[in-house]
Length: 128
Image (cartoon, rainbow, N blue to C red; front, side, top):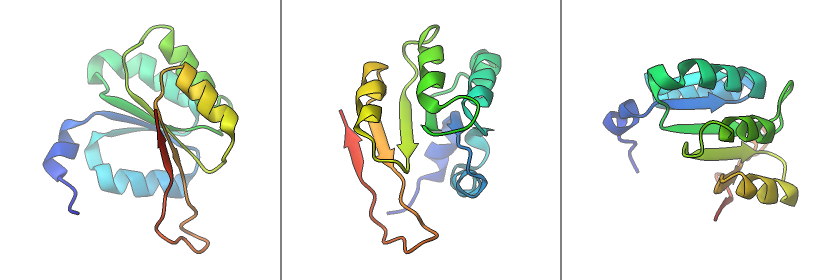
């Protein structure tokens, strides 16, 4: 399936991820439509600073990160923006993430697979 580059260019994405290799891969796909943050604290700051200018269409974030995790960042964002769609990605299968993210109106939790250690192409997604 081909990626529709024109559609991707119409999106303004805030991507929050502490792993530099994953950030670089994501940026290569989505190109100029991505604002990158390296942890939840950085993501929250960029969201607050750029939300009116960029009017983000979506936030995609890791959960486990230094300084502020993705769940805490989403909790802070929900205090002033109830509508921004939010997707979490994580390498850690912890059912408490499902509960906490659903409670904050994040309806997609995507589990990362490890491309660098025998990645088999599969990826599990839970949608609510």
